[in-house]
Length: 219
Image (cartoon, rainbow, N blue to C red):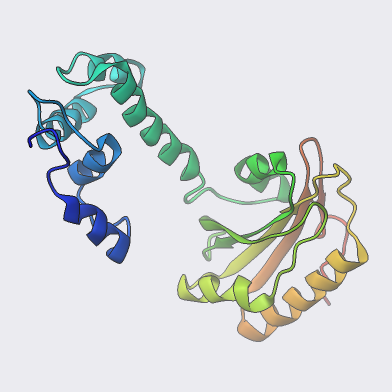
């Protein structure tokens, strides 16, 4: 039937090879799932791509709704996926000069009720390569091993890292465990030749920088 997903193997191949495998039109097909009786999903995907390429941010949703076979629901689904991708990747190549510079890119994790331990990898120019969640803990504790932090950093040829984690309690003062964890990460970083620039503990309204408080155990 025309309104069924035209290429079911796209999903299987994407699961196997990753999200870089499908084309832009195929990504849209997976978001839509199905087309309509009059307009197969392949057709809608192609028209959506044309609309995306010829629209500005302020009129994108309105232009999508005008496509026959779309409607507000599908239009918002496409626009929301694009906006989510934009928000999640806005950190790419952002320049980090001081601890405060990184806060806008990790602030969203402060809303979590569990501790999230993050690793921010940077290139030689202190530009962000990637932000990854290394571990998720209980309400007030997360367990992290240096191996988990540096495996991706090494693959990305990162010159430096900043590690961060949220304190759901709102109190950003480091615990003895936080200090000990930082010592272990610093020791591993020194061996691997990757600079540990900072460990930042943050909450909704505040943050604590190990660098600013002279707790990075540098000579």
